Amino acid sequence: MRPTFQKLLYTSLILASTLIATTKIAVAQVMIYPMVIESDTKKGQAKGSFSITNNSPTLMRTRVRAQPFSYGRKGFEIVKESAGDLVPYLVFSPREFVLQPGQTRQVRLSAQLLPSMKDREFRAIIFTDNLTAIDNASNISAGASQGIIIPSLGLTFYVRQGKTDAQLTVLSASAVSGSTMKLLVKNSGNATVRPEISWKLVDKNGIEVSGKLDPITVIAGGDREMPLIDKLGPSFPPGTYELKGELSWKKGEDIKSQSFTIPLAVSAK
Image 1 (tube, rainbow, N blue to C red):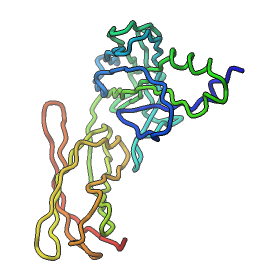
Image 2: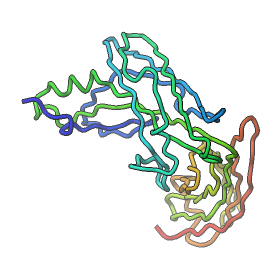
Image 3: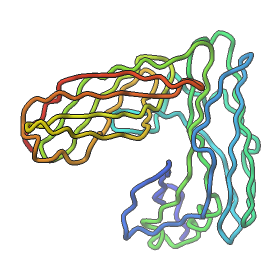
């Protein structure tokens, strides 16, 4: 009996995913570049492109599709609808194609926005589905197909029309003694950015502890909880400390930065 597609465990991989070691993985060796595309409209039209390479020894049939997405406090999430949904205005060329072993194909993206859509950012995640792996999995018996993961690699596409900019504000910081330290950052602007964060703390003995967080996405109009450090050392028992730091991000060819000094409340584990 052929299982339906809904019976398969279908997981989308965006940049990186954590998989259980015992899970069977049906995945072609695929490479996509770039993983993030940003484009400003000209007369309402925006364009972009990405390349996809089949590094596996077998032929791969591929389909391109898009979905709206967002970033919540905990990270990436697919959403059913969004005020900045780019999907209705997006066209792929080609949408479905075959990749021979070792072959690279370029996919062109085009978005046509209405003139009335001023000073806004639109976004979508572009998935490349491995239809060959899906077909192969559907031919496996229902029992054997349980736990199969069919990855679908994704890249993000941002389109900006009119005047757009990010406005970042550090809202708060919190930590658990001997565990994580987090920073809550809000973006009240109309453009998504990926700031990197440098920070420093002084413990009860006057010793400075510092760190740096690689760029992380803060969506336009949203906020994001930044994991600054996984384990705050024992020199920071429960209490209140002063956290200093700087956000820095790209705006075109320029680098923008913003310093902050806020209280850090460390609670008991």
